[in-house]
Length: 298
Image (cartoon, rainbow, N blue to C red; front, side, top):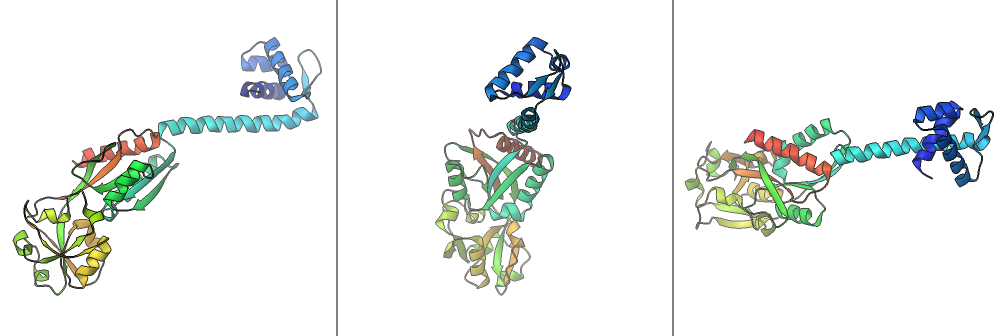
């Protein structure tokens, strides 16, 4: 049985006349009659009782089958529409990884809201994680798009582009002498103790420390932590200072002040990473929006 058999039957059942149904379907009456007989043969049931050569009436089996035929055709139309929309990227799901600064900036919420306004049937799963785990997720397929700290190089099979740049600042314990200053220079930070990130936070990427140290120089790191909240907790206890990107000032941890670095060597960059061979239309559509935003912000 094919969908055309159902369409032919529904037309005859609604017209109750072979000639009118054939005209509606734009086929010949003998062809329509043959197709209906074939359908009845496949079902092993009489669906129509012939009143005249062309006029018919529905049998009890025909009435019941008409309900199912209409429902099946509606579902087929829905499936076709869904398939076409999915191919255009209008529906589907996107799994996103993001670093905290992408959310603190309002960047990620804004981009998702903008995309969903035009594509209300697209759903998002968002996962906060550091840059290195995101790259892993992109490679193993658990993530579709990542918002990461811009790396020097992307792993094989991945690519990306910068979508935001913002300055660095230094997190200082409230009681520290530098907390009285409005702005801080690199020279003033040279001899200070610092709190750094774990290897997972920094491996393979520019560390925040590079914003205040030239090549061949290093800072005195007295403690390391697994995440930004732990790093700032160390700062609040007076263990050391911490270089963070400007959006992190929004983290309301008591005992800390944030000061801009007047002569930082570089800005913090957030990049979007995705697979080079991405095939999912909805993901490709979202990436197009991100590229457009990146070009506008450049």
